[in-house]
Length: 450
Ligand SMILES: Nc1ncnc2c1ncn2[C@@H]1O[C@H](COP(=O)(O)OP(=O)(O)OP(=O)(O)O)[C@@H](O)[C@H]1O
Ligand SMILES: [Mg+2]
Image (cartoon, rainbow, N blue to C red; front, side):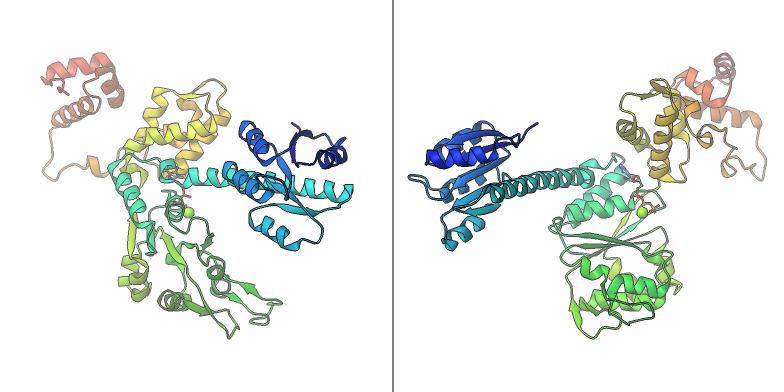
């Protein structure tokens, strides 16, 4: 598609000169002789670029420019101004012009301004698009969770996001801690400023310190230049410290100071820097227990733990499994569906790696599966593998038990779970439907009324 350019000037001659200079560049060129006419054209179909004279009778260039920006704030506009009138050029730029050209200009100058302005237009649209995409991902709407525990989490996120309160996200690996941290930022007033992230695990003490606070030249051997730290980069925005439970004691002291005073110095620096940063922490460790046992500074823990958010492991919100599976299927293989048996296996599995493990399983199946239906054999082996009986559920009571009682109990539970569906209950128990019916009769087990 060729870029379209609208030339706006009351002087026919000028329009002709500009149009001719740009002919042969492959643009679709249209012309308007007044601001009013230009606006009508733009309302109809937005061009890629407008080149407009500042001085026109009736609605002048500046007024028209303002009206254009009302229609499409991102439409690039080049203003043509009279030679020597610096003031009007400045005004045009202030009103949102992308570029200005002072008359007379030569063809090369015009072409350069046009290609620059078109480029700005493209980039602006691209950035807007990406921001929208980002917003969609981190909007709480993009987070799957209808389980009451997740609903409570999302509710907390939307309530605390607008404040500047420090948030601590707790949860096992892969439960969505980073997703929640980003959602907090993207639902806050800081969303147009930086979201800076640092994983504190596996960083040696001095490296962690220099990453957080930055350093000046010569602060340590190897510091050839100076570098800003994450706190500086996050100024006005949010700083996400992942694996915050792994921070060494010496760095904990410094972190506490920043949180209390909102100021710090770079390593080897003397100037005190003031920052406005919202801190979001995450850890898969039990920070409260670590604070009690002295592994983590208690005062820092209380500073951090202002708004704790606990993400339940996936096995404790099984209701979300099928929704998450559809969510990832939509992403990785929108044309495929999950066989009912495959979903059942997923719903029964323990998911030690939580949502990330589920995401990987679907992504993998999407790649491996040739048909339109993802079957159990397309899933990772640990999901389909027959699992050993859980030790706690089957401990023989001290006083002993009648085996038949156990059998009756399990049959009842299976029927309960399947809502009375005998075929599926038999599957759960690893017996045939016929055997199940026989035993139900023998033990006089009724189908539960749902
Ligand atoms: N509720 C959810 N809805 C949709 N996607 C989710 C959800 N929870 C997690 N995910 C996705 O699962 C993956 C893992 O989530 P994330 O990285 O946030 O977990 P984490 O708790 O930070 O893990 P780790 O402790 O290993 O760093 C990401 O791709 C994330 O987008
Ligand atoms: Mg993470």
